[in-house]
Amino acid sequence: MTTSGKKTSSTKVNSNPIGIFDSGLGGLTVTKRIFELLPSENVVYFGDTARYPYGPRSKNIIRRFSFQNVNFLLTQRVKFIVVACNTASALALKELKQNFDQPMIGVVEPGAKAAVKTTRNGKIGVIGTVGTVHSNAYQKSIHRLDRRLKVYSLPCPLFVSLAEEGYIKKKATYIIAWEYLRPLIKKGVDTLVLGCTHYPLLKNVISQTMGKEVKLIDSAEETAKEVKIFLERNELLRESNKPSFRSFFVSDIPDRFVEVGERFLKGKITRLKRINIEGY
Ligand code: DGL
Image (tube, rainbow, N blue to C red; front, side, top):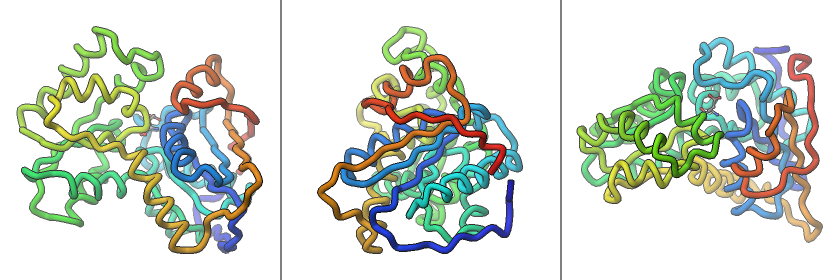
């Protein structure tokens, strides 16, 4: 395991895959958007299912895990890395960028950028894991773009389990959403950032609870757009008529991984392999 000093030179090879990592299967919501927008790209996904969840963990642990995840993706000769986990983006992306040459992007900045463009009344809500919210990463990102905006952030940890359980239309989910989101409604936010990989699955409940005049920002969707822009600008898009390959790696294969993962991905998970992440 290396948490510093390990650098790998970036080689501009278009057919090399995009590497994506997340704490588990949540990053498949980001992967889904990347598949939609960049269907001819090769993709390698790593989900750190053995050490999931990242949301309640400390900064140091998340950094250590993230460094290992990047080390693994580099063995797959990825040309670009997407830190699909909001918590890892919030707590480790800066250090990753300082220590690896490989170009990479997190999900926080694209979401923050879209929120700044969207708000009309200058009041933005952000929901995410405890780690993401306590890091203030979204707030800092939003304020880098416009200091005058008001940002109200709240952790909604139960949304993660509800999304995984497929509780996307249940009464219980509406009750929990109301409890969590009421303070943001009171603040009068007109834009709400879904700052967690799992929340796009609960879009309908969240939107109905907030009211349809509140615009929801899906960080997954915004990140995929940024990935496309980056690859285009840097002439890194894969140009081939051959079908693309998609590989999925995990650090553990829990029961129901494929079933739940396919719900997040809205597609088939084939080529699933377990690796020992502690070795990286
Ligand atoms: N992937 C995490 C995130 O987006 C949510 C799940 C976890 O806590 O690991 O923050």
